[in-house]
Length: 352
Image (cartoon, rainbow, N blue to C red; front, side, top):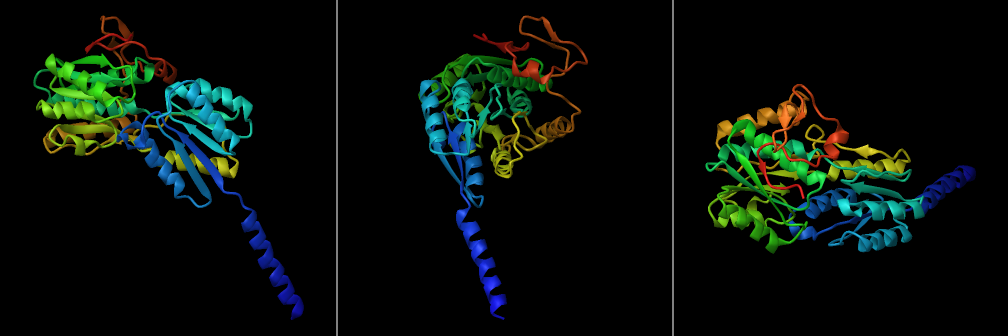
């Protein structure tokens, strides 16, 4: 009997020691704007909270980190502090993260919206252009002036691709629709974004869309009695009389899956680009002003996109100068989409 108690005690002690020795996984996030912006960084931080809820995982974030040397310093500091996995969530962090990844081969790095990879660094994004197309359908159908305004951050492929998808969606239901683009050259600057929206309203836009991090463009639309289409999250609370819908992110499942892969040792470097089908991107609920027949039309197209029956960029597609860019029956490769630097027909503005 004494031997039985002895071995039972040893077993309990072994379990206790193993549990006590298990190290908590540390996951870091770097954001380009405030988490309270209701936009890009807010959406990523909602995903971080899903990771934080996992047993044996702790998270930390740094917000409003400028692209360039500051981001390199922040990423390196996280690596030095022993973070197991670091997510950098802005395009301009790519080179900084790639540099730090070389210095810390034992840390896993994940960069959002870029294209560079290394043995310990992957990249990821979402097919937001799919949701942009659906938002464009909604905007194009609701417009009376046939002029849509688009407040855009920087002329990089990510933003240009979204503008093109939005325009294709608008013209799918309203062939007379045009999309006027104003560049702010900022990701998060509420005052500048609002002024940009006003300039578009001044030239006749009656729906304002955006690739920005604050709800300011939508607030400007509401003040003028126009409609708006949001981005990143459901911003309807900021402009309830204007908000038609929004193209939104759901990062939680992807972040949780990545953490589990790193923790189990199954993570491998690569590029990830999920979309509507995987639930990473979606549409926010429609505003009360959107008629039922339009909701049905948009949701039917959503289902077809999810099933692969209606690719957003399916030819024939011409650029804004009338040159055929995508032939009839063709769809561009992911590489071509990720490097898109030209506007489709119907966009008014420069890619510079």
